[in-house]
Image 1 (cartoon, one colour):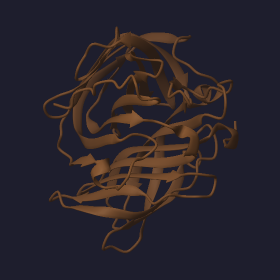
Image 2: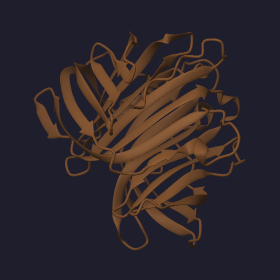
Image 3: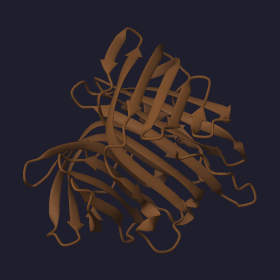
Length: 323
């Protein structure tokens, strides 16, 4: 069981986050569920709930809890937890119905129009487990423990009078350690499920121009893993997630460089402050120059024509992203 870590109160900037997500491309709906410890008091957790809805809508909620769940986080509305195999999430609460455009203007999650929402989803562990730090030497400034796992999920979703199925691709992420964003300028991060391949990767820029070596793994359908040697995506341009169609140039160990076609299907904008507070939408008045992130559900087409789906996260400093 992937349990929560023991909080390290004595370590400055130590934190822990959990993430579960899913997307049903047939109905254009999905979830982005993200929870983490409050840096000022590690016994408290914040939790973000974002529901991708058809028509570019994103229903959002944000809550806090003095968490006592050992295998995840349980607030008054959200119960997100790791299982023996896979993960599950239940929600019963009130969400604000927003859009990508509205979230690009200001934080959302407690305003109007609002509606009751419920979902129940269970994700399996059918794709390979990836331990990021088993693939790299030395510490990173965004955590010292970071694991990922994709799979399939099944579930139901109701927002107001709308009902959908949450059957599709699923994502899982758990990390902990010191998070120091001082030298973390921007990045791109992806979890992609192709018919016969699973891709996990992260590429980080330390400055507007300096790129670090990417971290990533390419798993075939036998479970064999190859190292990702190069990963290039266009930089994030504005608060609506542009560009929405682009080539992702990827070089995998023992293979020629390939160009994957990425089509963004849905976007959720958010802000990460230097205190590691994660906010639904762009916080234009937050102190300093925080990270602006876009959480995107994507369709990926390989050079051989095969099609997969997944999640891509891109970031940039707020000062470099156009309103």
